[in-house]
Each structure stands twice: as structure tokens, then as C-alpha cells.
Image 1 (cartoon, rainbow, N blue to C red):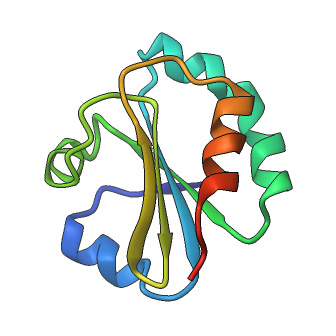
Image 2 (cartoon, one colour):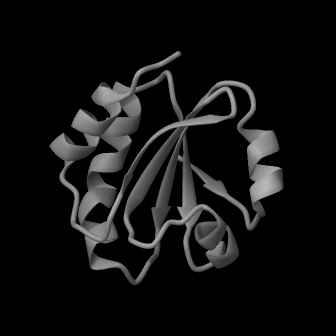
Length: 108
């Protein structure tokens, strides 16, 4: 999984304009983020159509605010620059819940 460097919404939108992306908002101090992290390599391998980007919420606090990400871990999916879904709340997420979210996305 590639780490997204500190960025702003305009730069991110430009970066996501071609292809499918899954943003994974996380933070080192977050216990619920640490819970899902071991499952992420398998989730990433099971969904090769997405490029997964890890977004450090603390490093990108302004971006998280602009994107209305209030809880972590959060997942936001993009296809060709358009948000196609988000799984964003303050709850712990299981591998199955993340997979169910990705499976529910309608790719246009």
C-alpha cells in the first residue's frame, strides 16, 4: 500500500482522476486502525482493480476535514476522479465488513 504524502483536496483530486482508488484514512495511535491493518495486505490483494492509498489522518488533518472524514479508520473509493462510496465512521471494522463495502461499490 502506497502512503499518500501530505496533500490538499485539489492535488488529491488531480491524482485520482484516472483509475480506481481506495483511500484508507488511519493514524498510528488509533486502536481500531491497528485492528484492521493486518488484514489490509490480503484485502489489497483481493481487489487489484483498486490502487490502495494510506492516508495518515494526522499528517493530512486539513484534507480529512475537507473530505468530512470524522472517524477512523475510514475508506473512501474513487473511480476516475469521482467518489463512488465511503465506509466512514468511528467504529472498528473487520476484514469482512471492508470486503462487503468494496463488493457493494458500483463501478461506472
